[in-house]
Amino acid sequence: MGSGAHPNPRSVGFKEFVGLAAALMATQAISVDAMLPALPVIAGALKVAEQNRTQLIVTAYVIGVGLGQLFWGLLSDYYGRRPILLIGLIACVVAAVLCGLTSSFHMLLALRTVHGIAAASVVIGRSAVRDQFSGRQMARVMSLTFIVFLMIPVIAPTLGQLVLWVAPWRWIFVLFGAYASCVFFWVLVRLPETLHPEYRLVLSRQHIVHALKLVLAGRISLCYTLALTIMFGSILAYVGTVQQIFQDVFHRPSLMPEIFAICAGSMGVTSYVNSRLVERIGMRTISQIGILLFLLVTGVHTLVVVLKLENLWTFVILQSVTLACIGLTASNFGAMAMEPVGTVAGIGASLQGFISSIGGALVGALIGKFFDGSTLPLALGTLLCGLTSFGFLIYAEHGRLFNPHHSMDVGQTAGLSASHH
Image (cartoon, rainbow, N blue to C red):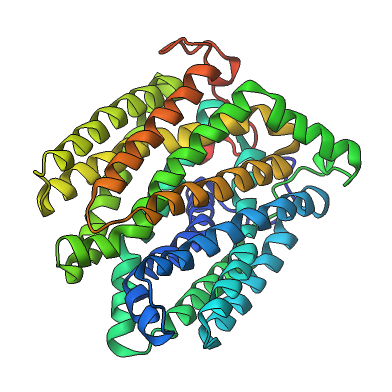
């Protein structure tokens, strides 16, 4: 690690650092995506009359993630990334087990919120990336972690389905706890402290106000945080309704895990492309191409549904391309939002994560609430998300597209040496 990191003879190299950061982020993904095949089963077991209400199992978790990010980053700015991360992962294991023991739907929602609050600790992995990198290289690392992170949506629904074949649905929460335990031991054994001692900040009112100003008063930070929030909401709308779409629209629920993997795989491919090109082309150019393509494909998808031309294969193809476009935008939006808040990376990531998680959950829940047995609410809602996100992008860039004019688009490394690449 960089010279400012805590000395550790087992210090991780570049590849392992990327893998560990991705594994941390994937702690949240597996806790959402592996749930999807179980939602109808849980509805039956806990006597949930309205099928759309099962989407709240996902929404409650994501809201918890947003709430938790308000304090995990603050604590990591003061105590360091490593100890707070370990405490959070332990809490994540305990919360997952408690979720599996409940017999009430309302209690499950409450415990899923607690589970999300605990899992929010993994946002510290994003702070650790910002501790070590800046500029286009940070965008490259974020894209690489995004690729590994996307392996979870590819395999998680299948893992959830396998659990249901051999055990009751409650064992899915055992899977969540086991995964968090594995990540805990990886961090314990291999991850040194990434926060430079001179950057540790006192949890004072001035520190919090300064961070709030950087996140909420800065055009770049705020606009790209909001753009990412809306894009995240479109993903959550898809995740929350995909099981119902395959069950009620296409009447092929058994195909959901495989199709979900294909769609997520498309996002992985474009994230890899982004990681290879971002240092040469720039975050702005790639993300702006991505959002324009997103608007085109979601517009086509909405038109296909309105004209009653939608079938299983049009849905799979158009949804795959939609998610592929997100692979060109999400990590770049996140990197550009983080760049101006490097001096308070922990609380900066927490505030941005709070906004994107809570806002994304509400957007996703709103779209999901309109599910009516067709794919129109998802297609139209995703198109509106794209238009809104594009509006924030235009405002951030003063109406100028394809103009890498900000200093943050110049790659600089702040931590890992070039020998790790």
